[in-house]
Length: 85
Image 1 (tube, rainbow, N blue to C red):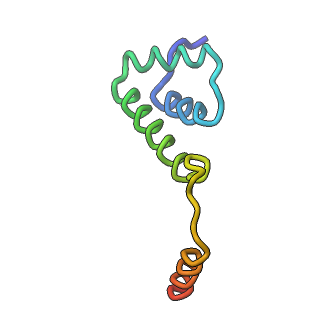
Image 2: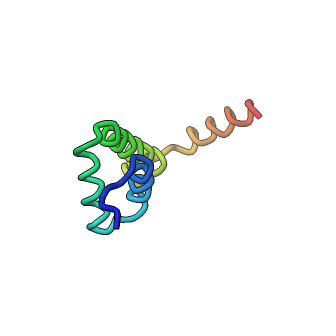
């Protein structure tokens, strides 16, 4: 049994962790790798930051329920979009 993760395996686990919680053993292996590899630790931080930003952008209504457009504003948006077709 291999006890450490390569940088490539670490990147794969980071990606997997965005969709599903990793088993406890995999989380420990990741943390051990981060102790030895500052590049992977920084890469993981950046991936998690980007994931957080994009999840807020892709679900803005969930983040702020008070966003409502008037009928006139919606119509102006539609008209502008039609101009650029």
